[in-house]
Length: 410
Image (cartoon, rainbow, N blue to C red):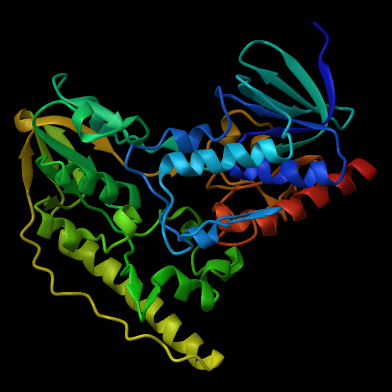
């Protein structure tokens, strides 16, 4: 079968792919969006039932469509986010082709790019925009292989609600944004919950009459560039402990303990039917407190420079470790892994040297530095800290689309 020829292919019909598609459509560029799932915004639709955004609704910004609802300081629920993105796609007749999974992408000698799909079809394009997101592969700890067969192990993407899990204690592994939200969802439903904690940032939901995120936007933190980070590994740090559930409230290891969640440090291994914890809970919480203190210092310093009165920023409450050393897995019905994701671009895109040691693309303003005609959108720190967020789409998508236009013209 002959390969289908296209000028531009966008891979992924999430918010990043749709945003680029909108800009290409405005410019009159013929293109197609390939989405492996059956519908637009499938990644959002796959979140757990009680999921909400953690950034205020007013940060929902897409090219040609800013948030216009009546709750700018609230937090959209999962199904509302999905509805918004599908309505957005319909608004400009986004050329989405669903049920098409791209399994490989490589440059050809004639400078075009060749794509192959799970169905065995092939396509050749002058330019390709990869908008699949960088959080593609869960970090699956080696100790999972030692978990008794009677204990169900789920990745966070498989979790839906407390009632869908077996009876018994639920062990949530990972105390970042998703881990804390899942732990809260479970304990509010009356489940017995143990949270294995690592290092994570946290912040209060509101200070000085405003959402904490609004202060971070005001002082420029959300627009941080990758070269401004003290350590490039921070590009893949997970979101801090925060929730938009029930209108938004504080969510930290401290609030979870107060709600009845039992805490342990890092889960280091499983043996003899039991889980072992590292005994480092105090150190992990202290690390998060230090990160929070750094944010407070930034807000106070930048507010002074801007001539704005800084808010009264509360310090962390005292924390007594009182942590679990081990857990008998005989009382555990399920383990939910929220252990972080890593990029998997190099597993299906050639050449491998188009990506750095962390698996992120080598690029400038979304254009690959190695493969002409290859572009990325929605990647963490593509251009700023907001690049993977809904907030970053109106800044990044026009730049990526302009790069595609320049490439086509050349």
